[in-house]
Amino acid sequence: MRWFVTIGIVIAIVTAVLVNQRHTLLIYALSSEGQPALLEAQDEGPDVRWFDDYFTVQELDARTFAIGEPRYYQQNYAYLIVGTERAVLFDAGPGHRDIRPVASSITDLPITFVPSHFHYDHTGNEITFDHVAVVDLPYLRARAVGNRLPLTDDEHVGWAEGVENITLEVDEWIAPGSEMFLGERTLQVVYTPGHTEESISLLDKEAGLLFSGDFIYPGPLFAMLPNSGMGDYALGAENVSQAADQTTRIYAAHRLNPPGAPVVTMKDIEDLENALDAIKSGALQGSGIYPVVYPINDNIELYAEPSWFQGWTPNIEARAGR
Image 1 (cartoon, rainbow, N blue to C red):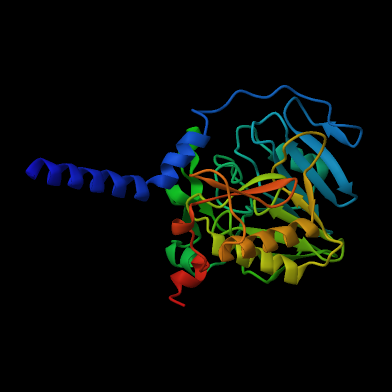
Image 2: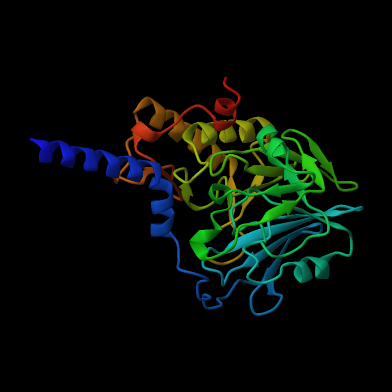
């Protein structure tokens, strides 16, 4: 009988460890070991020019540029958004190559770097920017020491690719719902949690452009990573629906295939909202065990945790005890 009790205790301990470390184990399963090999360059079409053998530049309009890393296995896209007084660089890739010369070849205005979220493949890592703006959330402000914000392992997840964790030097805090003035151009900061708790998008209402980071893009959306959440995704989708109109073009941070920068639409946001409602009510069933894969539409899937792990209260509200 004693051996049976011992086995039960061991199983309980192993189960507890696996439950608590499930995000880490999943990231290890999805990630590469160290810096991955570059993909072969492909035809990006007539609207895209190669800056060098790694970066591409696509002019979306006279003041908006998509900077691609199509040879990086995640096929990241950052966006240079130019006003008359300053420009914003929204995301900076993993920093395996320095994105600053690309941006400075397009504009000689001062550039503010704004990460859409803190994952290593967006923060540029060892690249040092002259001016950095970060989303102003109470728990981040409370953790910052002066203008220095050390990222946690769960926020940065750089260990998945052998990238060292970083501390951001913050020059400007941008609150959700606030506006960034670039000179004859204004960007609204839209709080879009889901992929991560601190995720933001930038909306240019006048131009009808939304830059979504990893909140939404063609392909699999991840709601099962550290700092992800189903309630967060629902809040993020609601915020986009309230801020943008139906004609808004959404430029995302990752693509599946060439050519050019990844684009989704407000119909995709509507499909995401409807799917989240159906998942919460139990009307939409996913496939697989961990992660559970839910269809959003023909172009997008949502990778989530099993129903018993799915939290439907937004993390920011849970932190505040509401």
